[in-house]
Length: 202
Ligand code: GAR
Image: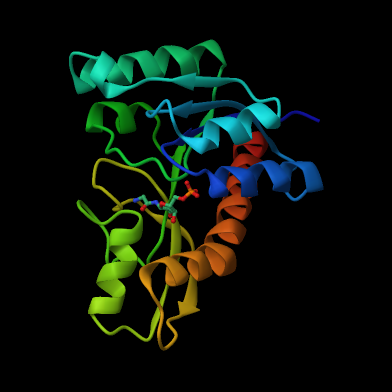
């Protein structure tokens, strides 16, 4: 069966990448194949996860590029080489320019660890999101998978799931609950949904 070639962009631990790899193995993802993992950090553990799964990896660090434009050009060359049709931002901690996002309309997904429109946009990433949720005294939080456009965390929402905030939560404990109960389920499901639609319309 034909599959959509997917690139996953990462910066850190890569548990969301792992959820996608596992979903591919178990058959929950049938319409997509991860063909490339691109990291903007050479020390990202996500790269190790990709290598263990036999997926090609690439590192493009901003410090080796003269500008955002050059960084994105290098990434686009890699994506083109692999014929990538869908890009998944899975813990990718860098904002892509409108030039980049407009080149892939409805072809970039992102997972964000809050219930967008709450706690999102510039400055809200990783643990900072959960710190802000706790500081605001929220009783529930969650995760969102959405399309990426030129507005950070502003594209159309694909899936969203609520997760409770519990008494005594630290940002780390809350982050793990949001990942386990929402992100690791929603992101592979969104990859399958969007990929199946791409195949249907081909
Ligand atoms: C995840 O919680 C993801 O939602 C968040 O960073 C973590 C990455 O974990 N992403 C953002 O905050 C993007 N704005 P992972 O590397 O283990 O997948």
